[in-house]
Length: 390
Ligand SMILES: Cc1ncc(COP(=O)(O)O)c(C=O)c1O
Picture (cartoon, rainbow, N blue to C red):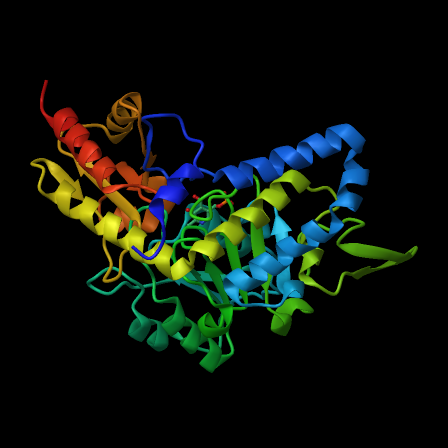
């Protein structure tokens, strides 16, 4: 292993005996991320919110550099927002424009497309998947016409280990000059992201998942190529300057998507979490996450009555499964009662994919690089025990 897991484990503050396999829901923060936030909250309490913001101005600015290093962009292309969904912004659509998206698209994104469809008369078309499960790039090419205004793809869906081919999709978008958005909420922190090679115009990510940051923080990347054409859905005196009684000017940088009020403790904690991941190395993280998830899938497949539901040629740290005759919510509750954190992904969070594959509620176990082989064995034994009829 190219990093020292012992020191990684020493950086954890989790409850003794707890197995955290819910890193796709919200992961566990390293101690330094927790301390960064507590430290700032204490400063706010001691000297005042505005005063501590001024005192920590350099560190706050450095968060934008951290995001820029993580995804290879310029700091002025980054907005720190309260979650990734808030980053969804208006593109100037017109009636009849088409949005092309993936079958395993996340509900919040699809809901935004539905809202745009209702307001602007835009058409939503789903790109078929390959037999392996990822977005079929050949089908995408065939679907391109003059009306395609946006290609919007979830890199790693919420309901399984699938990794969509965002680079190949980006090459098609670039060739045809089509606006391209990548939802990297589930991939940021477990898969290397480079917006230059992905060739996306916008990329969104959240702090709390594989980046191991705090809740209530995320970032939005908006490329310089498109920034000036994009108007935030809501503005205030931070995102724009009130120039005269009838006019305002938007900020020139991506922070036009931010608002005046912000949780600075969370922002600083987010920056620390990104630096922590970069210190370990995203390639090292990805290798370990992939190894552990592969092992977990194989071990679960050996259990009678357990069906692993992951698809895709390339798979990441999310492992979903169902158990014959068992309700996934009850099953997850029983795992949690055994000190093993998992979550449940319901059909409504990826409705098209779930309908096509006739998926029930699924137990979602998602591993991170700090998880251990011994935890997989404990987890598998628990699933074995709980899946037996009483
Ligand atoms: C694929 C995907 N996109 C977006 C989100 C939403 O992120 P946020 O809650 O930060 O808006 C999630 C959360 O589960 C997700 O799985």
